[in-house]
Length: 495
Image (cartoon, rainbow, N blue to C red; front, side, top):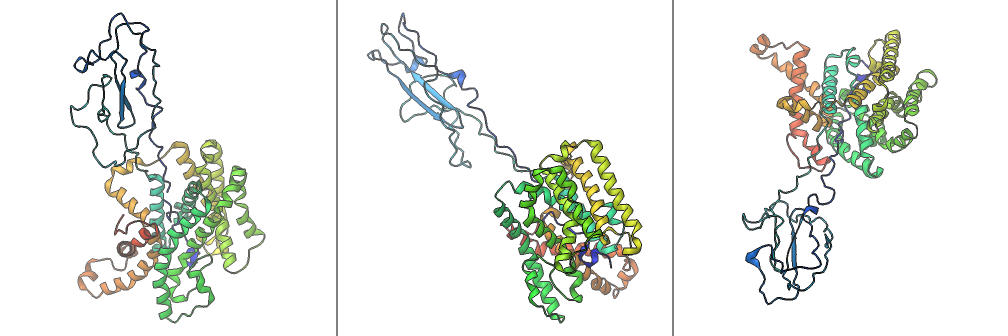
């Protein structure tokens, strides 16, 4: 049984509670009130040889008004101020000098009801820039297009695609058991790297609030899934001790019996992810003190555990091994978020990445006798270095070349699949092993149908792979709504 099948295999993680990489749009705005100064009031000359004519003859003031009369009003519609003024003066009276803009710019006037159409009736407003008397109950308005709404935050389809591929690879590995799968696509290293990026982004907010949010998104789906697994093991003779508390908060591997091992062995990922979330406020501070040295030294713990001290043989020891194996990938997420990778020279990145991959591959193949296979999931040191080099290349390419996979949005079906995978990542990861377990007795029943026995490849693992995905899709529909509730969203069958 591989290391992954013992609870140390690839899994999916980063999609947990992180909305991935979701860049926040900059708010729309403007510097001042563009275009307003061109309509500022001009100063009057000191002497007028004849009475000044009003701007609008039809609104001329009666001749009996010999004192300067000023009546000004303005209405702000969408952030611009309109001023109108009509003045009638005596032909011989000097006119006072007036500042070019006697009224300070008002503060932007928010729309109290943005969903209500408040545009004036067509033809109700005069031409922009025209002046005239405005009564206390009337307003000169301007038909101005409403301000553009801020664009909704767009998800990073590059990271979303990597997460979806990682989930597919996890299910494929648990179906076929390919030893080479981890070398082609190290899912767990990629998922921890993506999780680190989102965690660094989230920690721009207060750390306690971020940690609570992560726990809220992760634990309810875990509890919902755990109820079925624990009840099934109790029915099959399992009696837990005090360790059952790890089924509430999985800071250690939750206990179980051999009957349910295939279902609960994948929980090592949730335990490792949870510890990274709790340690991230401290890790991020430490990383930002010296990013490159801290990143390089993050591979030291797995070297110590391999060659110096193997750690205790208990839950603490298992947690130390997994944290050490993927610490570099988690910090790579920090480096991507802070722009460290983007500033690194391409030659240096390529050399370091290939060196790490080369060492990881060399160690895996030269220690097959010790682990019984070259499968990276059986060899923590090989996994750590291979994943470090592989994820470094992926993260650096994203930062340096600005890869975003925006073209994916033009492929509606593929884009839809990627969206569902990311919105239901926890559900897919938790339930995929149960789906594969149920696929076996379901296929056994197919042998009782002559047509199925004749025309379907019932003995093929690929057929089991397909049936497993059909059951995963069923679990997504039936159980995926728990992720919506955990995220405080309206429950939906599909996102």
